[in-house]
Length: 261
Ligand code: HPA
Image 1 (cartoon, rainbow, N blue to C red):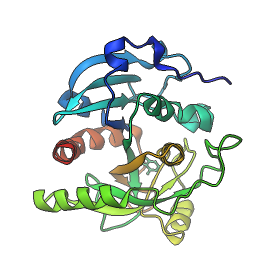
Image 2: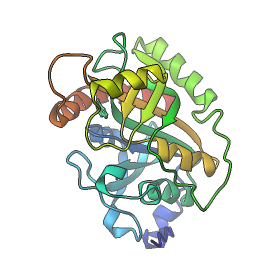
Image 3: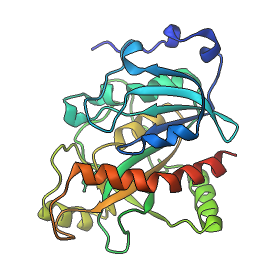
């Protein structure tokens, strides 16, 4: 597949916009764009080579604008491996942001909590990840990218300090990225805990790898929408994931607005 990501289709004003920050919004977190003073919104299908998501809760557009006075590009909706997409397709948006000049990338996602002390409805900032997808966006195109500080220690310290000042709960931990689309079994959840993961989801790790290969600084946040399978009673449900994400989005919006300012 040829993914040509030249941003030529964009109006010149947007090409010259030079966003400083890129923000990728996960399931149920789309409301964050309401805080952006938008100057332009571009559906993914209008950009050559950008795949379009089929998942409810993922809109599929870039919003260009300002958040806390900073120039940002927000990807509202992403595509996933479980939609039958390749690692290359899943990370096309990150390469597009890089082509526009983005140097700092914020990834968000919905995730299941693997820890009794990380309650649903709270946020976890990623300190590290386990890429358990079995793939990489770098196959055949890049080699031996250093991942020893994949999530920027400087950005993490900044966010942690602001969260403490605001008295917003912001856990830090390790995110396990699986291909999905089925939720985990209780046995898989026990395995993930043994492996050292604190949360589990179906996105983010490939984008972080791609971003690091491009030299971006990355920060990532998991909205803990539920206890992972077997850690609480009842079945997991995508509708509940979206609803919890919507309710918790506001906390992250406040934090991002302060962090960017
Ligand atoms: N597992 C995997 N992905 C998820 C979950 C989960 O429990 N919740 C939200 N995304």
